[in-house]
Length: 397
Image (cartoon, rainbow, N blue to C red; front, side, top):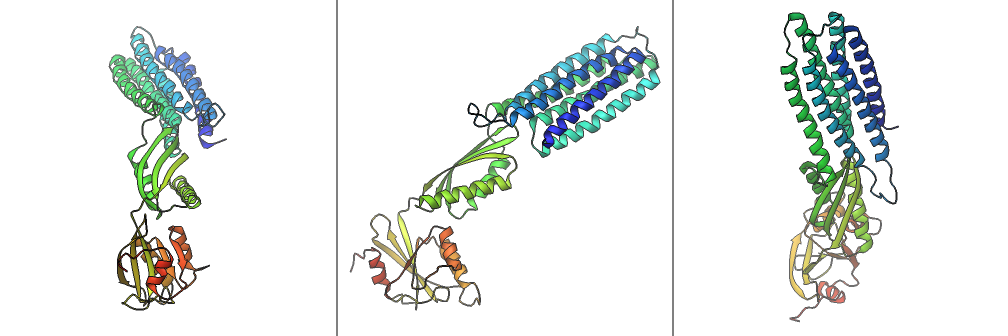
């Protein structure tokens, strides 16, 4: 049994106990208001039973409901909200009916019992609300606020008992004030439940956190669309992204990794759907380690190379566009130069690496693989000849 279900069962037991206390002292004091409040506690028991049933149904999936029955919890929240409205009406009418002509008995001990009921109600409602927020359960949150209504109802009874002692009757004023709070509480629950049932968007904080998780993936070039919705306590997220790869298997792997990261970092995410498409680039960038700033010959080393040449070509026909020679900023590093250089080149948006040094089993191979950078081995030492072998066209030569 899940924590939410245990709390729901606990709520049923608490409401039954409160009903017993109220009914016993209503009979002892002949208080009409306390008797009405004991009957109201029975509606709390029904509401808690409804919450428990909703939590049990919400876990089930079937062919007719492949996305689960999570929204049953929100339907339960609507039922609870309506119960709160009815409780407010009941409190007002019963308080107005308890007139001064009715003689109360055993008022002191009844006052103590009502104070105990208010204390128990307050403590349990705070506990259930805390747990409901922790596990993001709308039905538990709604039930906690419903139980809190008992605290206001107890206050009405308390005022009625005290006013009987001092000779005043303040039940009407107290009932109208409490009715306002009840209407406000029920209205919030009702609107939140309707919002989820109508598939309103996830809150800004959740969407913003999801966006950061997606953009932290180095393969992601762009987020074209991001949206999500609630279903009960659970979240469903959908994103359209552009990836820096043309390889289907690689794109699928990256999408699965993003999905896993989202589920790990954001609570109660049931389903993540990632639509991905490859980057449509106008130009491709080739990178090669070179022996000197002249850029004529390929270096035998990668991490220790003093310079790199970056050659830009048109993607559609591989026609030469431009070239740039850059210094290796990590030649002074004793260890891990290869990985640092690989990460440095990725930041320069390199698409293809050509080297004479194989990377199998080495750090740069994993860095380039994760970023979908193609690695080629050069068969000769000349930069221009090697590029021509890969299909690059130099129009002026």
